[in-house]
Amino acid sequence: MIRHTLASLALGLVLLGAAPASAQAPTLTPSHLQLAREVMDLTGVTQNVNNIYLEFQDSAKQLVSTRPEATKDMEAVINELKPEADKRTDEMLRTSAAVFASKMTEADLKEITAFFKSPVGQRYTSLRTEAMKDIIPLLQPWSVQTSNYLFDRFSQEMRKRGHTL
Image 1 (tube, rainbow, N blue to C red):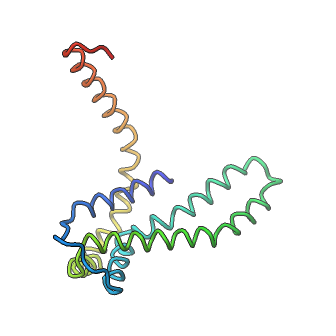
Image 2 (cartoon, rainbow, N blue to C red):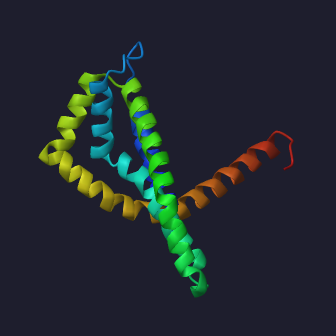
């Protein structure tokens, strides 16, 4: 599950990196930061950050699942850690909003917000989640196959140049 969240987050950051940056870093006004946060909310970046705690919680429960005597303490500790996790999540979301805002103008963020609030933007958002569920399982074997292929080709090319690996 953490891989799914990280992959989604990475995809969002790649898409952000593909957006044109202005010549100078924009002044980060409260409205600019709010728009950036709204874009994060609308595009799923916020949910991906929020999912980190939920995935931790699931992993902790799995870790203790074979020890029923520890279940009560595990639940108590998970609940005690929630405020700390929330604080860290809020910090990451503020930082992420500042990154988005520094990369894009308010005008661009307004257009993106309008798109994601439009009917086609809402369809995209709902279908993106379904598509990612189908894509993530494909990425694992693809990444292994591609890595193996590239390493084999690398080895072949290095042998041509007189290097044995």
